[in-house]
Image (cartoon, rainbow over all chains, first blue to last red; front, top):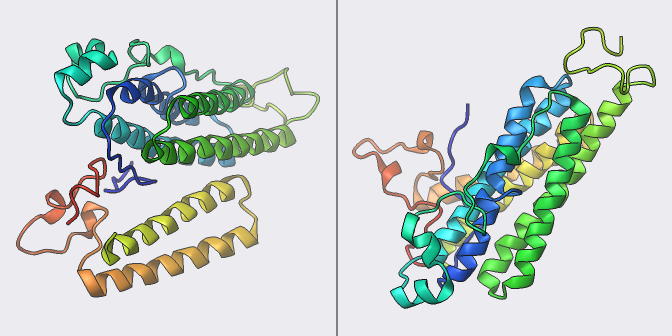
Length: 202
Length: 89
């Protein structure tokens, strides 16, 4: 189960609303490499993992991603407060506004709603951990791109924090992969699947 | 930023360090140094919460922290996605 804490992992206090920035930051909520997909990916993969350390890291990173999703939503929410019709029309936010007003709905920057195809749970520890390592790098690149486009320090600080977390998560998944490799050997590396085959590696 | 807000932020910083130590321990469960660091941070965080509560009353982060007998104040404290600079309590 989860219990809710009424706080953000890193503070988000944006002084100046900006619907254009909201429309690109929302990709880290509902886009292909966003935080919603990240949490669903890791929390979903846990069940078929054979090793306790990997179950632990997927649970704890998956949980932290829920906190990141909340930070990204807080940024979008604060950037879309008290908008004028002119701001909405001029910024291009009108295409989102017409369907969602100022609600926070999981879409990519180009308007495509979140899809389960963004995540994978293959039921094979090597396939899934490589998916997770790639996901962290793709999310880091997306934060890099947002930081290239956004100059407001109120927005950059939480984005820089989130970017840094992708790097730490990548490191932890790399360690999980190393722990996994230590438990496998040349006989079973690609021959059997420790997540499924009984006696794999025994 | 008020003294109350500063103290809250300090506690949040400890919360973050604890998350970070826990992630590290997931892949290094036998690392005694990391276990010692985690214990130290938990102790220091508990002391800060005590200071906060002595000055400002209950430190409410989870619903279970609510002790008020007259009103369910969980609904009153600000929501984290709202700009705290705009709605300081």
